[in-house]
Image (cartoon, rainbow, N blue to C red; front, side, top):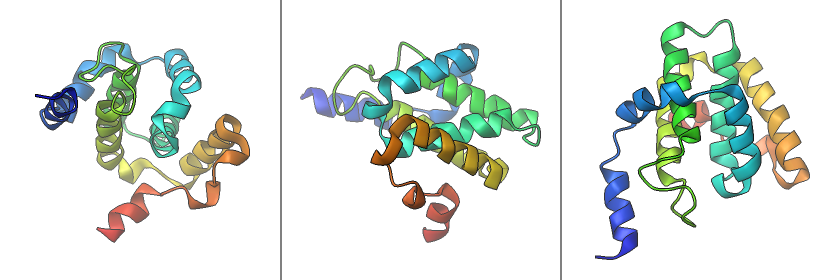
Length: 147
């Protein structure tokens, strides 16, 4: 059995809901910022953007506590040093983190408003500069409508 298949099996067996519950105790704004700074190039622009959407929805006073718990768990899982698939593995290391982030975005989608999106895009500009096309970042709501 190849390592890639093993990673795919681990990813297939990942339960995002359980991962989010486990990650809650690891969330901190400082750790989240450090993780983004250190790994933003490896994580990819879409997952960084989705992570920032979650972060700014978490900071919003309009977001209910239940949604904030989901967000804290997802971002905590991103920070978590021990993942289903370790982050240091090239190409697949952030696959489990990505799955959890995407799952969380769709769970709290109704709490991601224009202000949250604007804050996330501003932060993306600070992280990636001109190397990211802010106008064409995929909006999760638009993506959901296409399905």
